[in-house]
Image 1 (cartoon, rainbow, N blue to C red):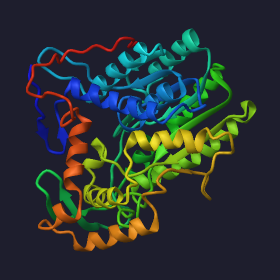
Image 2 (cartoon, one colour):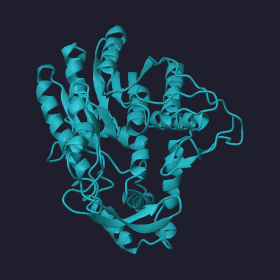
Image 3 (cartoon, rainbow, N blue to C red):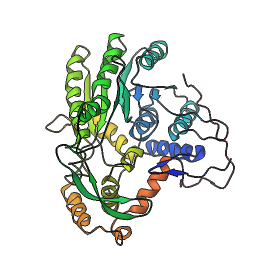
Length: 396
């Protein structure tokens, strides 16, 4: 079939297998170009199919020569219907990894569930024995609690008062004002239940209980802080409470890993175009301005550049991992440079529909968005017929 992007609101409901595969190949080539990293050799990536999780799996495999197990929850294709992009990404990754002689297997299912944890544990026991790096990169809006059976839904809302600021419809380029009402009821608790550190902690405890963590094992979860422009709706909002919980969990996990000299870290990453960020008011406008400045300065990074730098310049230098005063790894350092943020703040005041194409990088934002789904990728013939039914070689 000929596959074209179909939009529903801020989500693309189709994805292109060849475009996704080319994206994966491009990331692999980038990692190869940066040289080997003396890092982990047996890696579990929880949330491995898109964004930072996919970049972590690629960097582990093709940077560290590691065996990888990827856990994700993606929609498989059927005749006449495309898979979710993460499915095609994972299929392409496994093909490339196996061609390179690397161990790679995948598990598709709800990572919050006890069943998927057990399935993963059984696979590690059978094939790897132990793992020395666990990446936690889940980005689900809902979580069925495995113990209580309660379905928790996260919300992105300010706390205490209504938030009003600019935003942009990145499809039309229209800049407008938006207001978001404050959270109420159990919004904070539910958001923390979904996006906080409880599930990460459950994964590490389950692996440790089965002696599947190698001596000195490291685990890393991903977070975001961002600028003052977005803090009312993000870092000081409901999601910020969840991120606070995630960061506190890192210290608790480190304490429990003391017996194997293990460590848990939260890595604070750069603002990037993701399926989630595209639906968050204010964020698309901020990113379009940020991209413009960082590209002009020659310091722009995507997911793969961020994670490669995390591995090579933070986790595996041979020295102590550098952290900030709150114990966090910061690879958002280029985004948060004072000169970059000062320029963003000035452009923010100026930004209107009529000038955004000039002062911002809305076209770059759009391209990155479509790339997420395998569209607008250089070297792919989108007018050609393609087979939408693609299998993942070693899916469990």
